[in-house]
Image 1: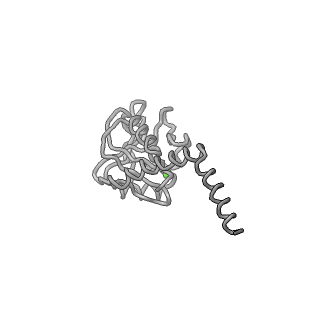
Image 2: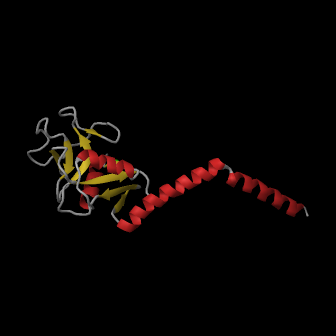
Length: 169
Ligand SMILES: [Ca+2]
């Protein structure tokens, strides 16, 4: 009898908690978010996982700013290479090895290369020979085809791009 009473009480309390509007809303928001990201991953299979972060190589070609926007929409940002090993891993695992890809680095202030993700300065700059000092017309950086070297280029030019996300589902 005592057990039945406790069980009934527990059931009442959990029904109340689970049906409260706040929890119901955040649960549905979370499951929508997961559903969206999950669907993209599973249906398109373009994500690569490296050290708990996920990387997405786009198929579409856009200017640098549109690329950054597209990354934000998928809960990410244009890739930030925190260390050389990350640059090399992502470079060699991009979807199309023979293509250039935008990365999240710019020198909107001439010569000062910063990551769009957190505005920190790049700690290493593996330029392709002849690039990296091309003046005020070339302010956005891309990963060169085939190798883990970088090229500064005109931000309006349309290339593929790589997004990074801290959330791998
Ligand atoms: Ca990173």
